[in-house]
Structure formats: C-alpha cells, structure tokens
Length: 377
Ligand SMILES: *Cc1c(COP(=O)(O)O)cnc(C)c1O
Image (cartoon, rainbow, N blue to C red; front, side, top):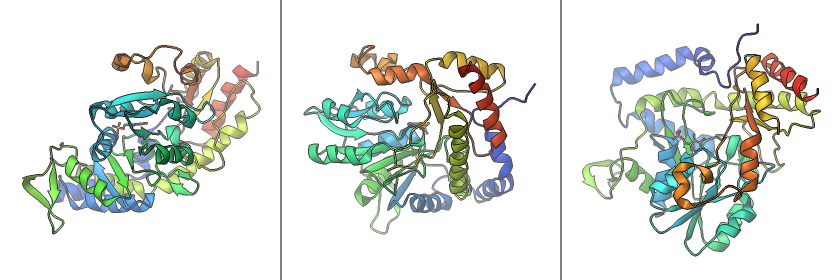
C-alpha cells in the first residue's frame, strides 16, 4: 500500500523552512508589536516589489482585500459588479458586502476565466466594475477586459487570490487593473499561518483609502503617521497581523522558486497525460504565465476518476462543484440552471490533482499511472 498523497501538504512546506519561520515568530513575540509592527510595512514594500506594484496594503484576508478595494473605488448600493460564477464564493461575497449587486457571467471553457464577450452582454447602465478572477493561477484575458472597461468607463479589480506571480503580456498580476486583491490563506501559493491578504494598486489615492478603511477609518496625517483617535471615514478592523506579515516575509523570499517548482510539476503532469483524449489538460494562452495554484483537469468521468484515485490513497479536490449563480446564498439574484452553460459543465467535470512545491516527480507519476489506467481502458 502506497503512502497517501495529499492535494496540498502544508507540513512539508513548514518543515523545509522551519528555522527561519520560528525565528521570525520569536522576533515578533519578543517585540510584542502585534499590531502595525515594522514587519507589516516591510512585507508591504517587499510584496509590492514582487508584484512590481507601486503600493501594497496588507489586510486581514483575501475577502477583506476584495471588499476594501471595491469600497475604495466607491462601489456600493445601486451598483452592479460583473464577475465569473466559476470561482470561490468570496469573490461575490465581497461584492455583495459593499451593497452592490453581483452579476454573474460565464467562463471561457478553455481557460476557466471570465469570458470577455459575456461581460459585454452583461453591462447595464448600473454596471460600475468588473472583477476578473485569475482562477487556478492563470490570469484572465486582461487585454480584452481593460478595453471593455475603457469603453464603458468601468473599474476593474483583479481577484488575484490564486495567482501570486503570474503574468499577462509580461506584466505581473496585481498591476493590471485599478486594484488587485491577494489572499494569503494558508494553502495559497503564498500562504500565511492563518488569514491574511493584500490590496495592490498603482494609484496612491486608492492606496490611502484602503489604508484608512482597513484600520477604523484612521487617515494618515501630513507626516505620514496614523491618526490614533481621528476617524475620517467609517472603516473596519481588517488589518494584517504583524505575526502573519513576519511569516509572509520569510515565505515571499521562497515564492519564485516554489512557483517554478509548481510549473515544473505541472509540465510533468501535462507530458504524462497528454496522450489521453478523454482528459482535458490546462491550457495556457501564449500571452500569459500560469502559476498553478491548482492543477485542474476535466473529464466527463470525473467522479469515477476521483473514486479510483481515492482508492489509491490520492486526495483530489473539486474547485468548484456548485457555481455561484446556483448557490443558495445568491438565490436572491434569480439565476437558474442553464443560465451559464460553460460554468455548469465545468463544475461537473473538473478535478484538482495533488500539486505543491515539495512534491516529487514520482508522486506526479503515481497519480498519472492511476488516471491512465482508468481512462485508457
Ligand atoms: C481564497 C480566495 C479568496 C478569499 O481569500 P481569503 O483569504 O480566504 O478570504 C477570494 N477569491 C478567490 C478566487 C480565492 O481563491
């Protein structure tokens, strides 16, 4: 019996950098600078550098990053925000919490990212913004999306929660729109040891509004300090913890290597599985790079393949089994089955295979052997 193989193994990653992480945590404990400590700003500078963005603002989660980015653009009640239904629920939750109405569109079935023609069809006089999701680590078609936004005067906020380090036409995600939201949920390509997130933007005014929103509406004084008891707007308690920032600084230094390793393992999967014509492999258009937060294949025999992999001790996932337009939480929007056919078909066929930087090529081969045996018979 083979050892079990997980979809993501966070223990393997911690073991590989344990001394550095433990030292960073101890440093914060000794300083007791738990809120707005120096590691927060240091991480923001380093993460902005990684994304080649002018500003990065640490916040408490990816969901908070999305919501504060939208609010900083003035999105609120009466507005419509267009996004894909094939995503994690936080994308639409953040839109709904601003008071705006999420408007769901279908995906391009070859990339699983939002279909630009569908965006155009969904635009109404109330539309204010588009939230493209760089799903599984692949950027959306930002050239087409930005062109639509320019013509219709819409804001664009990237949901980059799964795509740290991916690029579109050579430019990193996080710099491709008015603002971008990153998640550092533990299993993401860059993951904290708890909840954490960041907003990136090229615009200093948007950055200042997010800085105020995340910290109870405290504005910056003329000297660049935070006012303690002057609250310029109604904000939130959505700061990035110093402990998480210190951990993220350690991990950010390893991220380029980890992303490269994900790409190499993905390449191995693609080579081994490419002969299998009942299985659709991830497709990366030539204008983008993929950082493989998830390695997602699709097959009409999804449930059978998952069951066989589970028998072999191999964990898999489905991202995501119920599209957002069919979720009970969004029933109030009035969508029905059949409204978004590519999204609904993908939800029934996608399967996420194990992928994390500490995995061996042998592990990939083991997964492929099981899949090939089922699908080639
Ligand atoms: C993880 C994720 C989020 C939310 O991030 P949290 O840090 O968990 O709040 C938003 N959008 C997408 C696409 C995600 O994968």
